[in-house]
Length: 131
Length: 131
Image 1 (cartoon, rainbow over the protein chains, first blue to last red):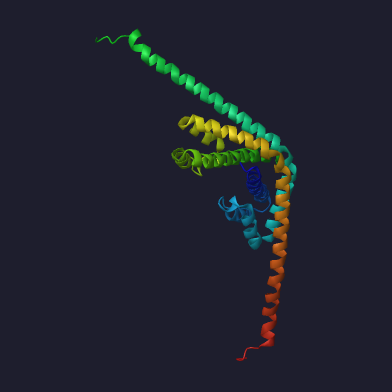
Image 2: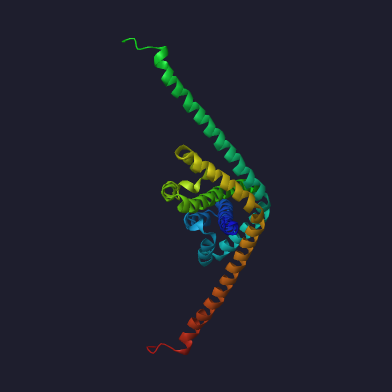
């Protein structure tokens, strides 16, 4: 298990997602202050494009330098604000989700066994009246 | 700017990505120990399916409970190992990338201005022979 590689890849995905969040925030601000630019920004920032935050920013820099600099400023701010909470939150999220999956699985397995048992016992309790 | 909402959404994406990394690790282990199961696991774990880690695990639990439990154990382990490094790494990643984007932009703008200047000066240096 290459923990360093996992940490590096995870960091890259995280940075891209924080970039996406910055774009969402700026889009919602523009929707109020400058609807035509918001419209352009939304159609430029397609879901596929923003998967790789750095490639997206490089493309945006060529089209609208001001917006690109704004995305960079906001994502830097988001990273400062959010990053420290992530370790505790993601550990809790995964632990809680694991507990919930295991519980649901056990419930399902138990429920499945009960109808199975009924199905076998029913014919004995209520014999076919045609017999 | 709703920092709490951003942190919550980011945590969810992070948990899904760590689940994806756990699946990759188990797939590479199975490729050596149990190639037929590795083949099945790979075709089950399509890229679309794994976007939502919890929905993926619910589906996997119904198909192969043992593998699902293994994914849960490995992702829990990954979260413990990786999470603490993420805040520093993601902040650095974003800051470095921002610096690099700004530098590239300045380089491009400087280079663009040189041909622009030439373009303006050329007509004066070489007047239209038809005039």
